[in-house]
Image (cartoon, rainbow, N blue to C red; front, side, top):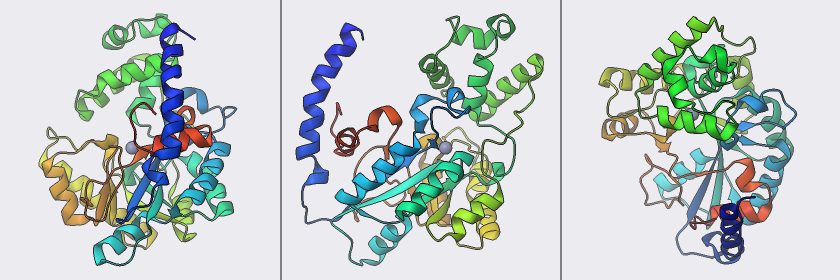
Length: 334
Ligand SMILES: [Zn+2]
């Protein structure tokens, strides 16, 4: 551990334990509050898919089970849709509620998370990308990781990638940095660059689909334990530079397709990458009852239902009960 990391840990520990003891999750309040947790992938370290994912995206299955038990002791666990409906209609809400959400519809959620949700009988919401369900298509950050995993000699022919990836062997952290720096560009430009690079290296899409298929998604939905929300058709970030027709299409078509295939109304939405602009919020208002962002914070019934806050959790920030609870205090430095 470097000196900087050691110092950071020294400051972090007392802040964390104070947050666990005195944070808002431990206090009573006159106003009902809702904590929404955001998960992405649920994978054990021995799974072959583990190595090609950004560490900030993963929680281990046994950690998820621990979370659900700790959360049940601290909060009233309820589906996001139910909390939103009760808040809308002015019906009673628990003092401290907590809703579990999963983004993207990864197949590992079906394989690892769903059995745990069933065993623990905890409801959840999953935000699916309607146009990618059952396809072999990958999200662009995963395609970047794959390109970066190619041998340096091969990769050298891709100018922009080489410029971003200055080091020889990229660890997970460095790959995350490359992805972060690409996020300044619009999605269609990034995808165009990736497609060109993949075809010049002769890379085919991976055999195994990364996301669930319709049958798996339907099984989640039919279980009555998991409600399905929309995460657009193609995981397009709803930024101000996106053209208006595409924006409206992503919102309306994903809702319609999910609703039709699952035989259920779809009225919750999740902004891809947490990006939104005024036009996106307006479009969401037309089609959905509520929407979640990636901004941390605790929700109250008088908050904006179209810009709800969530706490992102990943393995390293939540592998022990006190770390998870410190994170949910919303205090900085936890
Ligand atoms: Zn997403």
